[in-house]
Length: 169
Image (tube, rainbow, N blue to C red):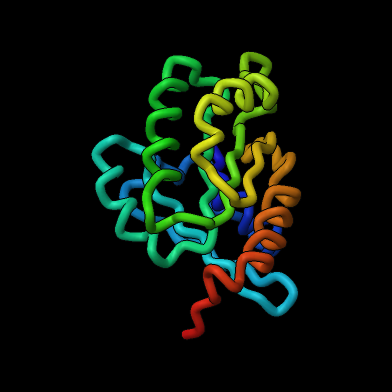
């Protein structure tokens, strides 16, 4: 299983990510950095296990966008994903930040299609308010859609600089 973060690093940095047999589910935080047009984007890959949800809020105040990755093949957890997504987007700390939902594993025949995922998540779309948001199909394993997703994210972060200025270190 190749993670989205490993695929992003391989596409944008030209380096091979970790071998699949060395990738375990994220426990805590993994970080990736890429440069696009003289701008650096830092990705914080927060583990998705229930036990880790409590640490997520610690990162909200410094985030410039949210990428919410849905396993399109795990139909049994879609309702849980809806609840988690709603909790994230209604947190005051992320008001106004762009939200990108990625329907991962689109390379697999048993995956929910993007249209189905959009329909499911439209139930809470009104809570997104006036912010850029999008649902895109990706396959971290194959790399399909990953560049488009990062390009969309980059443009939205640039547009949102007034609300969330960049952090210079």
